[in-house]
Image: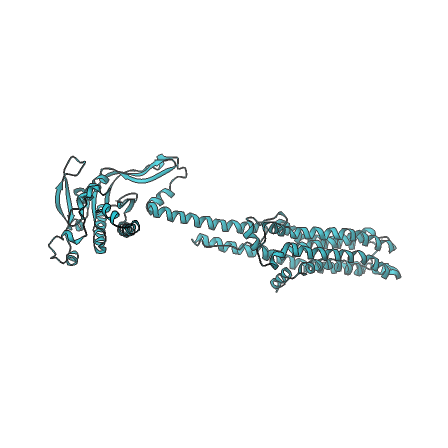
Length: 529
């Protein structure tokens, strides 16, 4: 019900005027009732009608001025609502000042009326109670002004979410929680108590008149206090519950949280900050995902868990460890790049690399880098493995089999094992996780030779020796080759055909698959790069 009235007051042309006039009339009604109960009307004598007519002149003029200004304020500050458009930045900033501006103007209209009314009424009373009447009218004006502030502040609240889309900061010093608490205290406590003190201190009033006036003021204070305190508590507690729920969702990992900004106080600033927190966390998570996609999840986690001072490169250099390196390269990539359109070649290459990534990551390895049509995969860094040879050999067989099933490209796979440096290299402004060592070079050389082997895989003796027995049984010594750049000959192993691969190639289980099992090209393998 209250929400409907607020929306009506916002949309109606006379809504703001009616709200302001109702607040001022409420203050005038409190003063009039107080004067009647305290016996002031009985002291005016027989000419009380003339006195009231004179007293009513200025309130009538002030009411007319207040109504005209309120209509102007409605058009100036809420005209964008009628035009069904968002406010401009200037309109949004003016809107935040409406409660204070309307309250100060109400006080300015009250001040002359208070002085005139007090002087006129005191002039016709026998005891010339100017101070008492002035105090009553002043306190009534303060009460109506404070009530105006609270109601207008509540009135503009539905527009704050729209204003927040225009302004980054909807907070205003005149609408802080402290200001609302102080004004609420004035409405429910300070002003009624001062009125009560004024009535009880009036020597011209009868005892019975002062008692009933005191009871009246106590009832007014308690009633207004209950309503104003409940409104204040709700204005603070409701957004706090919303903020608590939002932070709980963020803590559980739900970053698609957005709190509607509905206040011009510190609470509104807090709502804005929670939204910024969720946005920044979403962006950080997106960057982490993109980072992990480019360098690998393990490398991303290692980098993000390191020290904030990236300049301390000594903390990021890594260490030496024994790893198994798997190198995959496309056969005849130069010829393919010449024959195919770039887009078609990249499409085929991406399908191949998808196979490589899936097989490597599911065997707890890291695709360290893509080098054009080749890929370097590492098992044992940065994630240490008790056995890094077995998963590397398993991944090599899976890559070869799935690429053969696809039938689009021919590849060679080399697998080698040894001590390497695994860590970050580069400068303070640009770092890259990599592995450097003889095992990487050996894997690349084995890849070149593997392109000429029917099974398309060659593994070094060190890999076979370190693999588990069940995996080692699937491999056989192929040849001992003198790899380019190495002094000693290298025993090279290839996998034996399984029953499944034999059936796929249409041969007996014991027979080695022929080179036709995979598409091949006549391009010199050493010139692919």
